Image 1 (cartoon, rainbow, N blue to C red):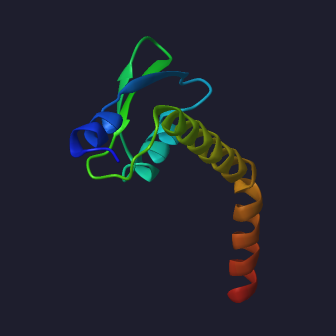
Image 2 (tube, rainbow, N blue to C red; image 1 turned 30 degrees about the vertical axis):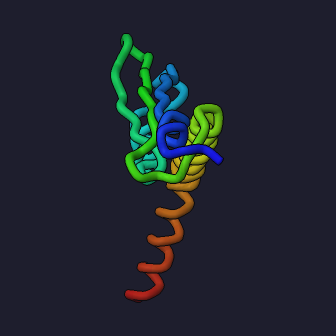
Length: 108
């Protein structure tokens, strides 16, 4: 059995992840960070015109999470929110057409 000092050491890690903002736009990054805020503390800094650096560590009071699990979780969330954004953009015109049709038949 581990004592308290060993348990706290396993939680003390930090890592970074560099991403290209041309692939993952800032709104996608922000949504991912917000979604993971209960598990991870993530600080975003800009390393160049389109490079973002994410500094990552476990959130205070969060369940233990290994460094590799944290990176995997971030990448899955980035991909999820990127896909959601693409679907939203690609279906925007259809949504507008449906709303316009619904409103025009309602007021005739």
